[in-house]
Amino acid sequence: MNMDLQKLFESWGDTAKGEYIDQQWLLSKWEVVEGVVWPIEKINLMTQTIVDGIELKKTDTLADLGCGGGWILKQLKPYSKSVVGLDFSQSMLRKAVEFCPSEKLVCGEIGRLPFHEASFDCAISYFVFLNFLDDDFVEQGLIDVLRILKRGGRALIGQLPDQSRSQDYDRAKSEYFAYCAKTFKLGESHREVCQAPQKLFDIEKLRNFLQREGITYELKKSFNPFYCPGAEPVVDWRFDLVLHKT
Image 1 (tube, rainbow, N blue to C red):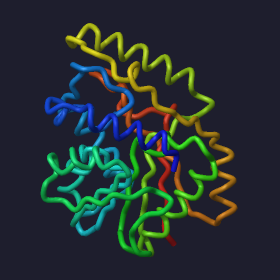
Image 2: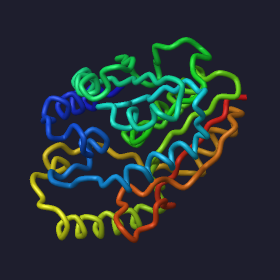
Image 3: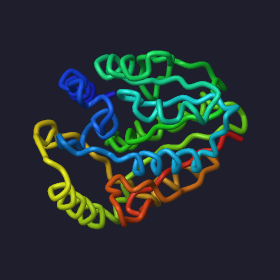
Image 4: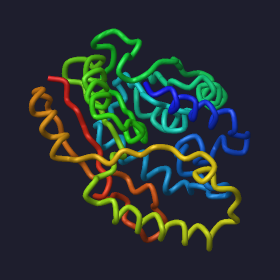
């Protein structure tokens, strides 16, 4: 794991104040402007997109890999039998303890997951793999996620930027921030303060790796992180990768 990336996440966790606890800070750590609040409609759309994408059932055990402050973990708890959150940042996990005090939280990293083989029915890693710039690390991480799934299990690796659609992403982001400027009283932009890496995925290269490893998978449209009233709930300039353990 890149130590600079870990230090950056530790810094974010230490910077987060109490008022972020129910807002997007604990989800979109790299795309935060103070004052932007996710309405319940947007939260519900995101949650349902994940649940449908992974076919999560109330009998399933779930691992949230890269859980950050536990925002998504808490949303998914009612849809599963049990949830375990993992993050490599102690400071983010301290926020998760505040937000999800009754859930099991573990410090560890993708690629060297501290779980036994076949431990979970399902796993998610949302807004996480786009931080991993190295292809070898991405591939190692995907294999490690498959390892901890039971036979028949499913993993959703969400919010992967499509390299060929980066201009569409930039356009959507610009439109969204124009909407936010009109709708909210904006404060500091933490993206400008703390720049984070973002990997752009070559879908054909990813397909070739998955096929070479004999991994069963699906590519799905992803939840629109820039959703606002009247916008499409899912987009194709980001995609979700669903892995199936056969």
